[in-house]
Amino acid sequence: MRRNAIVTAAVVIALLGLGSQIAIPAYVSSEVEDRLTEKGGSAHVEVHAFPAVGLIGGRGGSIDIRGRGLTFDFPTENADVFDRLDGFDEVDAELTQVRTGPFRVERFELKRGDRSGNYRMVMQASATPGDLGQYGASQVGGPLGGFLGRFAGNGLLPFGNDPIPVSIDAVVRSDSGRVRVVSSSGDLAGLSVGPLAATLAGAVVARL
Image (cartoon, rainbow, N blue to C red):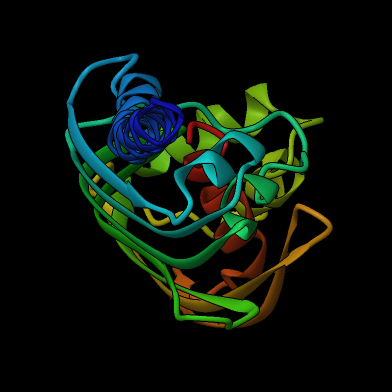
């Protein structure tokens, strides 16, 4: 009888462990999807971790994110948002048709390989001169307010209101959860995209 009880207890524990291994990743994935789609759009998220209980503490093996038609607000400051991803060994995020601040983002990618400290960020977007000027004027104290304000005030915006292409290829790093740009290439009408890369990366990660 005692042996049967031990076997039964072992089976129950194994089933509970298997259930948590399925239920916890599913729950975490669903929560991230809900945050991403809070203002519309669609998203699919998969997280993997063994043991799955590590996800409760923000640790996991990998997180894979796909989204389309999402809307993000710019963060009001360079907050400690990257610690939401730092606990994963691998990160793979690809978003399309995203709207954030004055920018329409056709494609956004943020990836980090196994045990790598740096993230690779690639973005293709556009913004109209009117939207850039209006945002810069309304966000003087924000992370991009001064940058865009000088951009508009110095007459660097082209005439008309045709969309200005924005391209970014950057390496960013988490500095105790804050975004730090290691290197960047690309431009916004000839200006350095370093400040923009940090802000856009933070805008996306803040919703995870």
